[in-house]
Image (cartoon, rainbow, N blue to C red; front, side, top):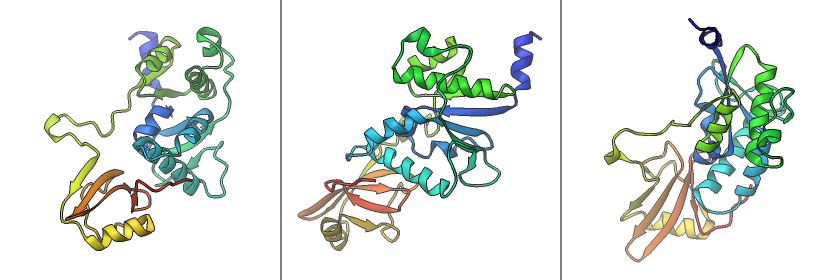
Length: 237
């Protein structure tokens, strides 16, 4: 067996580094790596701050992730490893350091670019954890290729993908003959508790077009708060 293959086999513990594209795709991604640790560069928080306002799906994902980390961290410092949910799952932390001692992505690919700073965060983590397999997870194929050129493992985030195109999850559903009382409450208050509405697709964030005769409402289901929101409302963190 080649020396490099032997070294890879010995790296049983994994640390996944998530970039902004993964969080905007699935805010709950940090909880989908089983017993392995998950880290997020501090730059990602900065980028998410720019996405948190608005009614686009990415805006809801950004807000939901920020709330998730805020609720999980409580009085803990998030630049140290903390547990997010179950004790048998891996831990989570924010990476502050962007200055690796060996390979520096900014010097190779250009300074000031967000992608290169994220690469440096992953490289720092790799230097700090030589016995772990550090893997950058990104929806950006170019970023993944850059990572691999720096001797850094990289993967696409594929949780939630399906094999049957006929069963493709669209992220939105039209519901006819919906409760007119619920539509009125949504338009008046902006939000409504969805726990008693028997909605489909409540395992994740989802858009609904609710209709009843002459009344209708475009709404967004927040899987974190279990509430429906009128998307015409202006929400903030």
